Length: 157
Image (cartoon, rainbow, N blue to C red):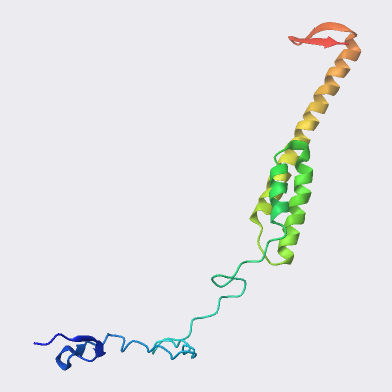
């Protein structure tokens, strides 16, 4: 019995290697020639292009111009009086991102957080103002010194 030659196509009975299931291997182009263009397998179409707004593999997405403003706005939104600055920066970041058609969830979060903190800061400011007004009014009536008002020691200048 002879050993089949792995470099000769054909079947083992003919003295060659079996043909692979996909057909014979593609031939190498001669030096200086290019490979032929890749063709889809029979029954398959060409792959679809990337949908609009999405980027093909290896293609970098353009930089989002409002991303940094959205991040800074979100961070400033947590700091009471600075929340107004955070709100403005987040809105500007969102507008810049929308102009180039990109989403900016961080800017949206910055707008929400800044608005809530700003409302809370205003409410706390009003409460402190009303309380200080009450204390000053009591001190005006009672005069200087230490006074006991409803079980609370009140020191008036």
